[in-house]
Image 1 (tube, rainbow over the protein chains, first blue to last red):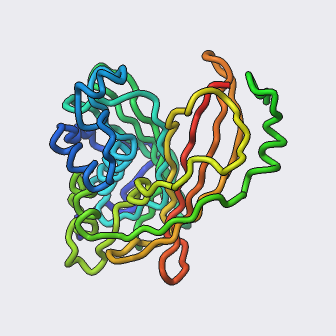
Image 2 (cartoon, rainbow over the protein chains, first blue to last red):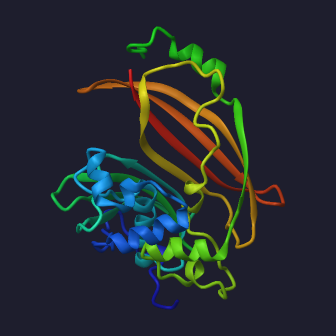
Length: 138
Length: 150
């Protein structure tokens, strides 16, 4: 843990490394299995098209989990105190999506920071926006 | 704060329904599902994927998949059109959720409000689930925003 990002290393405006998470059908099916999500629009392209989507879509709660993992990878050992995501548009399974984040506030007394989070679809549309509060160990 | 196509006054609905508990459920936290969830989310922190880790716990948003038995309370007024769309989820992590925990969830209506934008007036109904462990400690709060066209 010695090389972990510490609260003292962080400055307002810092950006998290961009991440392209795995939203392959195999991985989304794995998530849906753990989440007991049996909706076909998440795990079957044809079924999703029949519902009017361009293809199977990534569950909203999975997109939130992907963002949480991005935060943990950026700041190992940190604790996510809250994460709030707004689902703006669909993210397609088997596509390349892009996650970004930036520090928007810091609180020295609580050793907490605020992050703005975004997930872009492969075509550049905004799929998810969000915020998170993250606490750092002493 | 108009109520769009509904003749109902949202302020009255808020007064009548915000804070009303309408569903109670129990959820078992299983190691395999906690790990699969975290791994599928791309997690590589041992706290979330290694059950032998001394601080092994559920991923922050793990409770978001625990669904209330009812979407709205019995007798809740018909406002907006259609079933509504998922507007997003907000999670507060109060304490770690451990493998083997049995969580008791209580569901309430947390807020009802509207917003008017380019696509017209939309009604937001916020459903809140609070999760407590066997020690009755609050471990997680999940707010789910359901959006309906007014």
